[in-house]
Image (cartoon, rainbow, N blue to C red; front, side, top):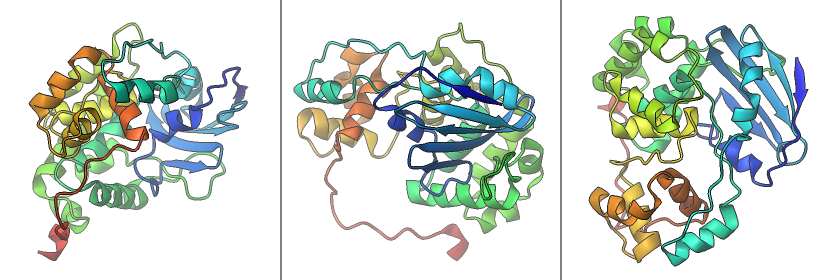
Length: 299
């Protein structure tokens, strides 16, 4: 099954880049202007291949869930994102808006796919979480439908639910995150389903906190991608509050409370504004030498 798109967002490559959990993500591969993404749908595993991103996108779909993915193709490209004309209350936001206002927020509608790597990121560095996701998918995810030789779907819920703690430990995942992943896998019917499009994205994101072990940070990380939630602010993130403090006030360190206060004028689009700032390259300066990251498998 193939479909063309009439949309041509100049920043479309940044829209789809948000779906990849680190460059070595085996489920989401970006090669120039081509995106390959494999996922789990209510109809079974499926793959989408989109060529010509940012120019004239053309997509092909493979697998039992091809029709389901096909129906959500426009959402994946961000076609239905209502891009606002925000009033910038900070000069840096005004500059970022000038560069990235036309960046559409897409949505995958596959929160099970998004929430597992988000859980992995709860207690470790981003690099460690990316490696753990890559390892889990490579070891326990099936080959993706379609012709791509290395693309894989995320591990199926029943596979994750059966994994013992010792197996998770082998990949550097301690008991708390392992239990959260297994518990989420056991209630995967809540996640792998049709999500009504007439419900605001922020409500869907908030509903993720009904899952065991999922708080505001994890819900925001997953909801920003799964539902294209423009207000999914990752409160509790180790770096984000500092990024906002540095970008908006020139202060190297901030708090979540200060971040919420600074971004209050942009409520409803705080994730969108933070994404602009990150794409502008803002990152708070390091306080000092980094401590080495030691995997728990070495303890």
